[in-house]
Length: 178
Image 1 (cartoon, rainbow, N blue to C red):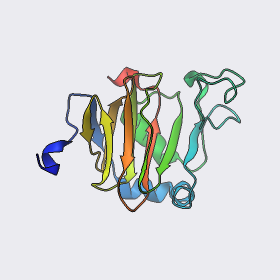
Image 2 (cartoon, helix red, strand yellow):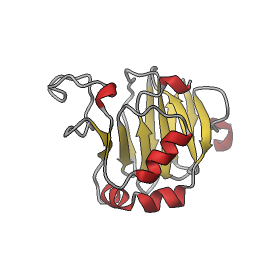
Image 3 (cartoon, helix red, strand yellow):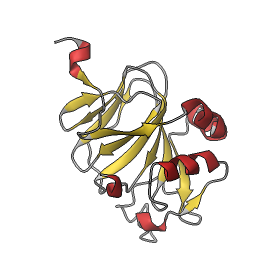
Image 4 (cartoon, rainbow, N blue to C red):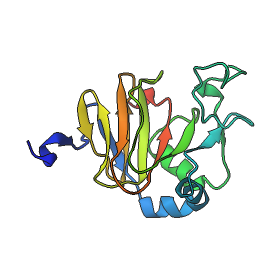
């Protein structure tokens, strides 16, 4: 089996679906302060907050979420995210729920896990052919330039097998789009 035969590309059906195209260059430029921090090593940054709570930790664990916030509490956008807000609106993404920019360093893996929501939206900002997600037992590459509805209720993981940072924007609580 060749490398190309092993790697699945998102389509209109399946566990990773293409939602629409994104002008990544414009989005990167509009989020440059957040991308700069990600490139400098900040692994998670909240882009939609619940008041003064950034929401980068897992909401399921009480020590990380002492106020028992839920996705419905995340309605306050961080400054400088106006273009991302327009993208969210154009994709019919809820106006509630966590939104984060996630940086995955080179040669790293997120552990096998599942999330409490069914679907999340991923927008790759910086990626390359050596970055993958394993979802429903298949290896997927999510190229920059699109938004992807990703099924996360089952076990999945992400791998950055490259020599550069992988940076995605992730919208939580997107079950309404499935």
